[in-house]
Length: 122
Image: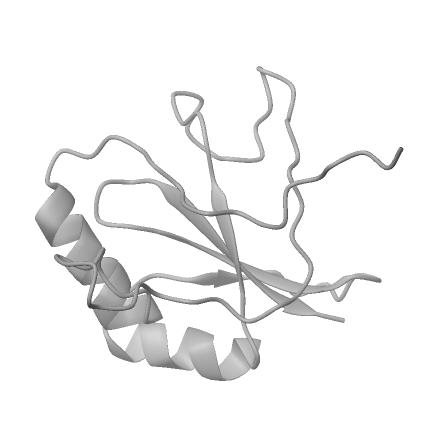
């Protein structure tokens, strides 16, 4: 018998100091629309593509601030264009100068200091 598997991520739920403002920031700057306020409205849909679930060691420095317990990674079509767009809005973005086998990366933080990684697949 084949093992039943999940088909994707249905949501990412986390605590925020100001959920309404943070949702608005993600919609304005990254295009991730807010949770619909009715079942008649459609939630944000992601394009099909690679997704990893990657637990890191508790003492990792990869997320930046050691108090951060999670980091989201968004796939983007054109990393240079996305970085330029965010920087034009006054958002600090650090572009990793290296190109890896799996693509290119950039890092920013949302208004509450949560790390956000952008990834253009290679």
